Image 1 (tube, rainbow, N blue to C red):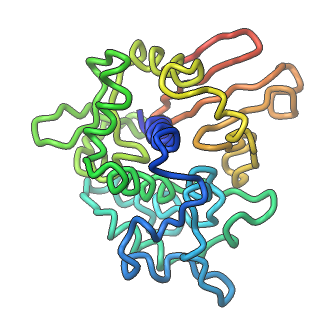
Image 2: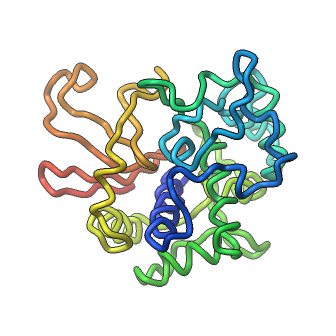
Length: 272
């Protein structure tokens, strides 16, 4: 699934919101030991870490850099050479070594970074006092009857290869290291069940979407994708589609070539 997993994480945040266990305005530091996060977001001489909220993470408006993709020695390049395990504390430490792109919630700015959802995963575990694997099961897999969708954690959990160009890669350590941002595994059929429930109100009250529809453009490498509250939006009427489209696609894509999108204009769902 790669980053389509972020829709699972978004689902859990929204359910916990309905249960009154979280709010968009909750400070991230509420769920972490202050020492672990101190210095995470230091921008132009100011420390913004205490101001980071769940909304900043969910909407990708924290300004945090993406250690998975940015820099000469980003994680993706290293993983292509050798599979590795990396903890959330190590991800946070690596993020501290890089400069944020802007202060949290800067007008009209968003920057896609896996660390936002990696942190959300730990917040979910803290709010529920359960593992993310168990929360996914309780909130998503069991209610929807998903039998072939899972978050690999144990040694015997099957993890299929991913592909880089024509090369098959076995990356079980790395995929287990990013459960909330890109570690889940599913099938196209079960992903179709999920995406219909996600946008159709089968998992949480879909009225919440009016709070999530504050879309902002991502960094230029993601053009024309915009980001709302935990999901992507691709407008179809602009230059990127030669003005041939109409409406929008909403959902998420993944770096493995996976995607799960809804086309409201025709009430169509697309999964791969």
